[in-house]
Length: 144
Image: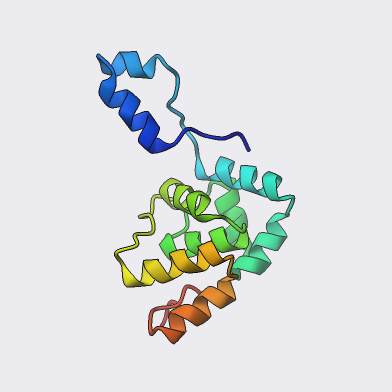
């Protein structure tokens, strides 16, 4: 996957621009869709959607609908997709943004646990075990 410029760097350039057009003319804005990003991640990982279904424990029809752009996942399902795609923290945050969900926030107890798990390379099951152990709602069992 091609490296994208950091949002913070782009924000500095936007704020320093003489006008919105001056910044926009630089061509740094993108109109990315979630489905395009998911396919980029698949290609970069060399995995198949079936692998994502298995690792995320999401219904295969639902996953295929997300990949086709027919559905958007909720926040927890987007996080499960991120685990299924073996995303790092930056990729997870981008996936959440593109899904229209709030990013992980380290001031939130539950989010802090998820962030820690992502950084440690935990699986979805391992993350859920940590959430359960620390008495937080798990990603897999949203009825808790």
